Image (tube, rainbow, N blue to C red; front, side, top):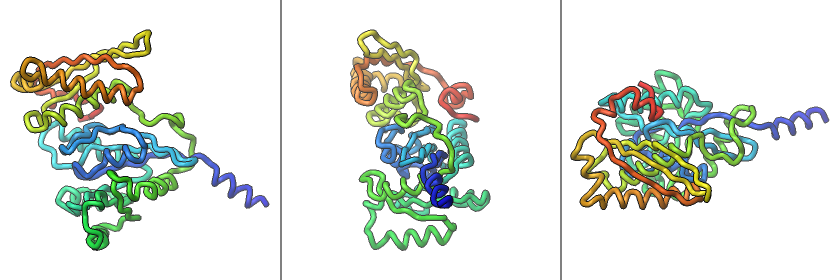
Length: 306
């Protein structure tokens, strides 16, 4: 009788912990996090290295609260911004109760993924292997790929998923929930992210810049929400500044006759209204700030540490 009561108590105990999603750039980390949470938390783009800071999303599964840490893609850094991004990624892994290595099925164990595995070996990190984008690879190639990767490192478990279609996501989420340690939840049950709305608004605008100007302006811009004004009618007035490094880049963002920034504002505002479920008045400005990507104070404001 006592044993039965104890088992029931253990089964109904709350669990809470951190799961770090790491991998090479463009492996699909942000898409995976968004799919698990069921809401758009992280910026998603076909351009690599779009996630810059660690973003915490909250995934609820039964009595478990899993804080998913969406980390920047790990790559060979070339500048201070790169170093801060990679440092943030490894920081997220070191603090986690579960570590997920996400690998693009089409790229397999490429140089960047192998570099991550080598770090696992050096630090003896217990990690779960998740092979993503399995819908883009012939089924007969998946098992050999899994065997190849597991031959290089002894992963505790292997999952095959498609973050885009949702295939395999439920099983992965169930396992992550079971791995969390017993403990009280850190966030309310209905909260989906540990980020301020100001940050989400800035990320939305930054995503639209990537979508519209990825060829002309790959990584030389950042967005800051300068003002957030709640209005009596329930709407919100948001003022944002797009920072670029050169006058020529400013001209690209503005476009002829201001048409480009007008379109960016329309696209960003529409998504903000959908995300925030309220009317949004968005005002965008463009400023030149040379070398913002190597300014320690600027990087700290972006959630990055040198």
